[in-house]
Amino acid sequence: MDTIQEIARTAEEVKELARQTTSATDDIRGRIESTQGSASETIDSIMQVSEVIASVEQGSQTIASAVEEQRATVQAIAQTIGNVATVVEQTSLGAAETKSSGEHLDQVAKQLSNTLNQFKTGV
Image (cartoon, rainbow, N blue to C red):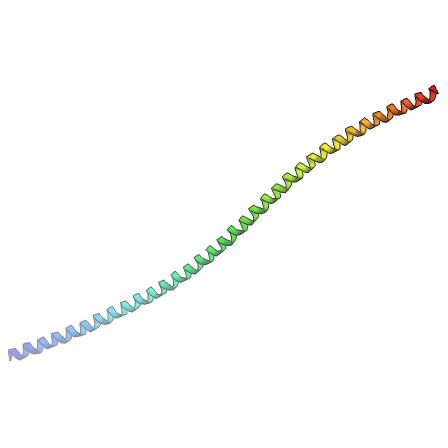
């Protein structure tokens, strides 16, 4: 009977090992499912971060475009101011020449008036 008892004990040990294997397999299955869930959440988070990065990149491009437009506008304004300064300088020179000519004409008119008065008194 020893052999039957040993076979029964071995069968019992095999059953216990089978239960432990099933339990370990269930535990491993649960861990794998948990890891897959975490991986899925991580992928979703990465996708959301990618969308935010794309949005920020688009905003950066818009800002860069606006800055370029402002730079071009500032250059145009600076050129216009330079042109206005040149025109103002030319106008100032023209006014000075006009004043000088007016003063000269005033002197010529006074001389002509004096000469005319001398001519009248002399005649």
